Length: 483
Ligand SMILES: Nc1nc2c(c(=O)[nH]1)N[C@H]1C(S)=C(S)[C@@H](COP(=O)(O)OP(=O)(O)OC[C@H]3O[C@@H](n4cnc5c(N)ncnc54)[C@H](O)[C@@H]3O)O[C@H]1N2
Ligand code: MOO
Image (cartoon, rainbow, N blue to C red; front, side, top):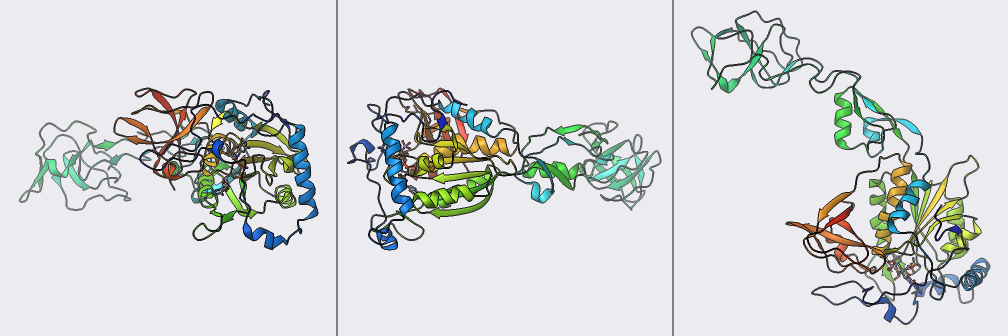
């Protein structure tokens, strides 16, 4: 539980949302048009879809929505409202992440999966070698298996990988392929390029620069591991490399944590699903951006839906979602059709994080929904609608929550040195799209909360502490999805 900024939905302290002097909300646009500072906009102008009035009919607003809007307005008035409320202490970025991790509770239970299906899960049990590796002594090179000191009498028939070789007598050699079992009695392997066979006598002579020590170019049995040896701890993320190791050490199935199921609700009647932005409406950027990222975080995305900016629809969607984690985009602020807080209040959800001291994305939230009848925990991550703010919310709340639910061990922080100074916010952590260039990471232009242009060129989000980071200093990096 967070002491500062937490409580039942609808009973939260609202932040002042003051813009710090000199903090560019619009986003730096070096060499391009500057972003428009949000505080210069004439109020909270939430675009309402022109088609919406037609869809609903003039005055045809459903009863629940009208009521909900009034309740939302009353709740905002009661609690001070987003703009006029008293100062509130929101959790720091670090604290918000640990609250998100803790909200997962225990990881989801372990389930057996075929190797193919285990990819992206986390091991629920340690991976223990089911065999010695290599399981038998093998040749590390193409050449000859030799017995004792040379020269060696060699025959024509060799040993290929996968064959069971005959024993080798002292003073003899047999051609051998890389990976083939070493014949009993062999003392070393002579590489093809280090031996010469005399045609008339079939005698193999050493043509190597030095002598051939015993065991040369032989991979002894159990060199990599002995049967029963622990190879990877529980909590390891199953990557393609882990699948390879599991197969090599004898596994057909792995016991992995169940992946958290996620349902994504994209809010915003102003959003278009296709074509060029028109008529005051904009394209939904988060529907395409988020699902593959969430899958990369170990989630099973069971649905992605557009939900209308109506209290009843949002409430129904959240209440009936079968997902372990509901993720919403938009509606986190206090605009006329921002119903997320009201929805959470009506559903008797517990707000675990309600705004974070981070830019962009500070209105992000995390709530615990009432558990299912069978006691399954359900959580909701509310990502702000501004696309880069939603990305910040995913990195801050969704990533640690989903990784913890999926049983993934927490990776150590990844750091880098900055090639240029990284501008910070005076009081809040800032998540800045950066690119690794030459000697370190550098910020990218077009990094405003509503922009994705900088992010699309970025290879990480830099965690910039309040006040910024000087050139040459270390900074923590968060990974961005790549596929
Ligand atoms: N009076 C105040 N207004 C706002 C504050 C504030 O403190 N006081 N905070 C601003 C900040 S910061 C953010 S971030 C946004 C969060 O707003 P919402 O989460 O309620 O999101 P919306 O209002 O629905 O949308 C905001 C913006 O983003 C666009 N959007 C929404 N969804 C998408 C999407 N899927 N793809 C592309 N663009 C999207 C939407 O059209 C709006 O332009 O609130 C500020 N307001
Ligand atoms: O500053 Mo907001 O949180 O636009 O992202």
